Image (cartoon, rainbow, N blue to C red; front, side):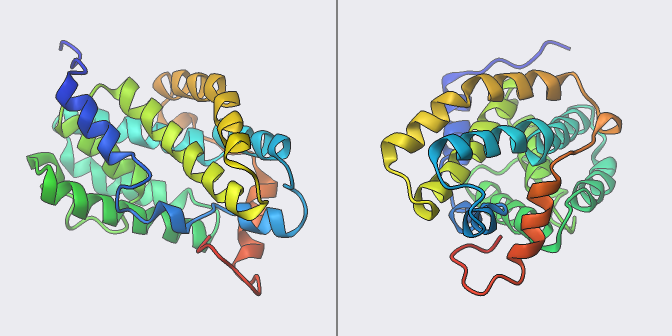
Length: 229
């Protein structure tokens, strides 16, 4: 099979879907960063960059990218029946209740928005899938619209990092210039994680970010909170 090409139209769709303005509520989640800032673990741009590098390389960043890739491949292969078990596995891979709710709510919001504005047959089968983790539905949407997996993965990881940087800018707080510097610093990491995800299957998955898991659990009972995770 000839790999799909990234046309101008497909690029516009990808930019829209993974824009911070796309209505999935990403701005309401900090992915445990709020608890880490509250505890004084992340207090500056350099610490934020190291935190996000770990999350991308050893935590949800890589895991999400692999699940996205598997959903893309199953959709391209016409194996829609395998998407529900994949979604269940992706949900079970979340270490805490808040993070599981985060990915499920973003996934459902993404399906509703894309399914209405950019409908395609591949998305129809997801309406009955629950829970529906965010990376799974993004992978299906990319496959259904013939967006190359590499660019879907890179864009997803970039959006993931950018959303958490935005949370860090508000929480620490940082200036916008510091936030952009962190995003620029993460470019090689995003490229590396993309390559690793493209070469991996779900049986290769493991995470090793115990500090994030710990602060995600602490956030569930944090007294004052700006974010939902």
